[in-house]
Image (cartoon, rainbow, N blue to C red; front, top):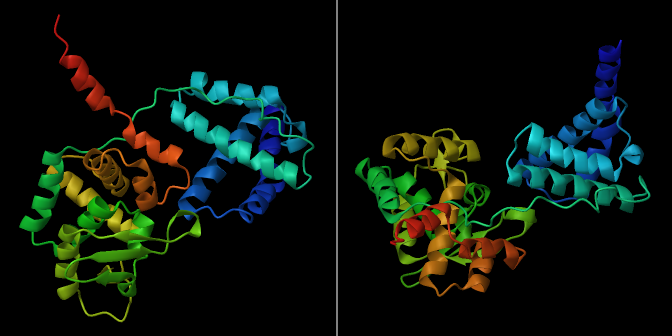
Amino acid sequence: MQNSGDNGFETSLAATLLPLVEGFFETTDYAESSRRAVKGDLLKFGRWFVQSNGERFDPVRVTTRDCADFRDSLRRERNQAVATVNRCLVSVRRFFRWLKENGHVASSPIDGVKELRKQELAPKTLDRSQIRKLLREAEARQDIRAVAIFSLFLYCGCRVSELCGLELADLTFSERSGWALLRHAKGNKQRQVPVPLAARRAIQTYLDCRPPSTKTKVFVGERGPLTTRGVRALFEKYSAIVGVHVHPHLLRHVFGHEFLAQNANDLVGLASLMGHVSINVTRRYAQRTAAQLEASAERLVF
């Protein structure tokens, strides 16, 4: 009987939690991938509430203890990473802030629940030999489009959605300079970024032999404009070739690391180029990576 009731309570999430989540999304400008992640976080919280308390999900019934126990359950019982736990807490926090602002709850029970602390490390990156190998393999295979795509990530620090949304009219190249207008930036914002000479040459080489198409997107394939799935498939192919797991966001991290290393830690400039709303996000790239810390420790001699 208890299991039957629990199943009924969980089924009730579709009637109680999901409509509120959809209303919450109507007031946000999350990218589709972010929306999926946040929805997954909120459903995870809803299911935990139902299973732990044996009652239907009702935001009014959520307590601060529930939120703290949810955090501890993710970390201790499910052994989820600190970053994953904190992302869930941020999703729940934003959701309850919206519930309060719209009169669904009188107060937010999660306001007093702190996120887990973790050692701040810089995002993972690639060393120069790995980057050279990636570009060399694409060039050796005369994969001109791949060279252009890799170059745009490495020299401009764009996101995969920004690359796929790039229009021919968004590129402004001359002999001495080049700019790209990234219209599909995070949060529906747009920004202009300079395109250095090496990237301009790679992109122009691709444009000179770009397949005839009525589409205005820069990158096209046999079936039309290149999609984010197509870009990730390209990265999977070259990951297997070079023997290193490479993905679009990793090359964005490479750009962030190298820009700071070669521009006297110019965080303000990097924040502008990467489209960060807060410089606190950009500051991550000034931290040391795990590999750098390990190498520094290995140099110790007593």
